[in-house]
Length: 313
Ligand SMILES: [Zn+2]
Image (cartoon, rainbow, N blue to C red; front, side, top):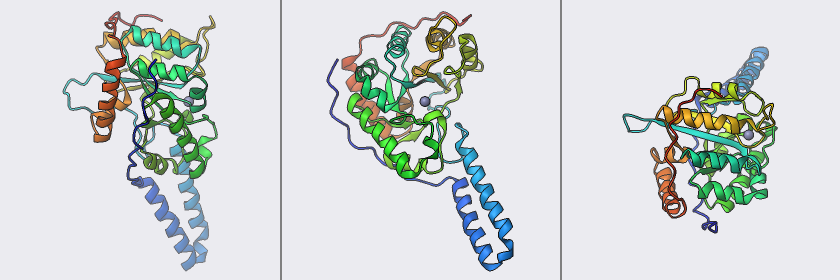
């Protein structure tokens, strides 16, 4: 394994542009305060509308695919190619010492590239697996340092500490600065987007997921991922916290071969989120160029894609 490359330049911050729901809620707060000052008798209406706006903001944060609190990748952005067959596989909650190496072997066997949303603390525990992800041509992105389920309840300072810690950890181990963040369980609050902008990160969720941390039936997981599968979809599976099938096997390991075969049969091409970003932003293009140079030296030739169709699982 090559030694990690020197740390890249710091993230280019993005300018935070509040989403309409945020500016609307702020205006409503100001309006409610003004109304109560001018006409104190309006307080029940003013207070009620402020509470209602908080409920809407909370609901938007509890809906992982919502873009109401700010930009959120739920599909790959369109490319300039007329026949766009790209698709992205994202793999969360690792690295896991038992599952991830087997996932990497499966991806290699099918010539597929994936985006791993890693947990910082686990990356510190198993750095050699993260190095393998990079060496085999995959992308490593930020899934928080500790994957706390209370993440979406955190104030801006705590959100920032959690995300920055993972940025440091993953950059040091992989030699590549994460460009994407996925919130634990996809849950967030209105304070997240300004923090991500400041750290130069993009929020990513998914198009479809198989609930493979809970569902023990690999066939059902595959069905959820494959039904209606289309170019530009972002799929979510887990190498960490994977449910176990009746045979004790992690469900993701039973699902991946069928998923990879189905994608090959449909002539879909696996890409990473940062490669897709590279097609639309100068920042992503720069990162991609750096990575391609690095990977050309590291990655052996890949096997041809197995074109057997998805039939049963
Ligand atoms: Zn997770």
